[in-house]
Length: 275
Length: 343
Image 1 (cartoon, rainbow over the protein chains, first blue to last red):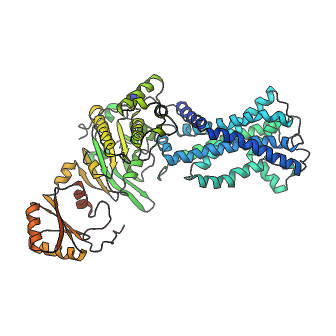
Image 2 (image 1 turned 90 degrees about the vertical axis):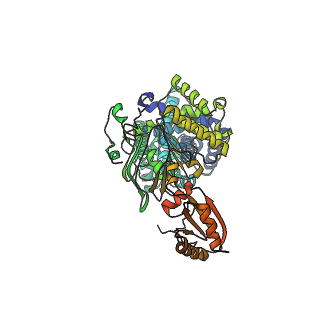
Image 3 (image 1 turned 135 degrees about the vertical axis):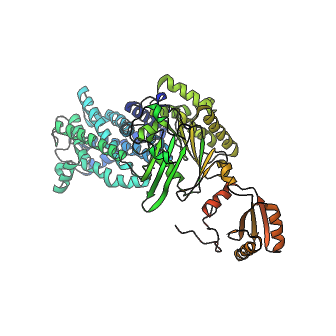
């Protein structure tokens, strides 16, 4: 019966799919989807600006910032934290699309394609990270308002740090969103894990002024190093919690760790439905 | 069927030797979710140039099998191979070979038709001029060339499903898997879909596996496997399956289940006919349906409310093979209509 059913498999007609082509395609889709949804474009840039102005102004008048707080003015101190917040919000938003992709069935067709699982993570994370980083970098134009004298070096360093923070937070968001089947569940985890990560990163208040256990948590928080690196870049004259090299190495390490975690989660062989 | 178990797994064979195996081979394929057995030692094969239907009610294991064949889930037992590649071990080679049309749409509504296909092509390693050629080709095939630059969300349900089909065909797969492809299609669109499938089978020798729970759709298939509770209960062409049933199907409706039970006993005594009772109806096979039905109605005046004599349908095959109706779980010979079949 075997000879009767013979057919030549068309292996030759299909070229070997590359990591980069698939990742590029997934990345491009994220970008295209973003700018086609105008409300998203308006929302993610306007809301952090409002947040930064309202919260920052309120805090600045209510509390006296501690001496080691950035430029000494709370709006200035809060500036790097605001960038981290913009990046965090965008990372969360874009990884919510992962749950949507899963529920809409799009993800199934990607998972069933002959694509390395790393390409799926890379494309999706780079897509979200690109959007987050662009918004974070655009936000730098407000830096002169808080007394930052931008030069090429500080902009370049800030941009590099913003890209790294964008990548690590998006990859973390990916790992959190992957097992979720509803955006509600994702929000719950965001509130438990991702928002405290930001709050305890030195974005809102300096570690120096915090109590012992809180200071410990802030030291263990990988995001603290990213926010501190931004502070290094924007306020080079002000003493910071860690050295710039330490900040960059820890942040880079966390990028690698979050990416590896996402990859491992996606690669997991399963006997349960993938979606 | 014994030869099936020789399908290689993990071995890299030259293309010519691979060609010796049927495009899809299942060998005692088993899957359970915890304690629930979804697929029970399923063995079958799908040949090239064949439309193979997988018919079964919801929960019969169709979707589980579909997930396994599309490499989204590893089976817990047995083997399945596509073009000689094991679906669990050589997932990426299998993925190269198969085109998939999911039951839920997988197209991105925010992208245009062409953008969707371009993305899909990229996932399969196609780019540049060859990809443009393929996009044009599949769009022509599904009749959507003039809608290439429209957003998918602006298309009708039937057109969206055609985009889905085009997506599955972009890399010229040798095996096409379709999960309930006519979901949400009107009869006209359904007919079109089957014409595309038949053209694919005839012109490109593609092996096509279609899951369905629609009897009229199953009639179109070259080969049909009937699944019930994860087991293969019948296998053959629709004609072969129907011809297993001798003669006609006679159906009597009575007023109550009790009357049906009584009538079944008396039919056995008087006409030597084995009737199966489904609620308050009786169903039996008979060589000369019309003559028998007339004399039976005359023999039990006032008992029969209505009667039907028909040629066997696939549903009759299903009832014969499984002992229950396609849509309900009421077992045969049960006087209690609420009686659920134990699992």
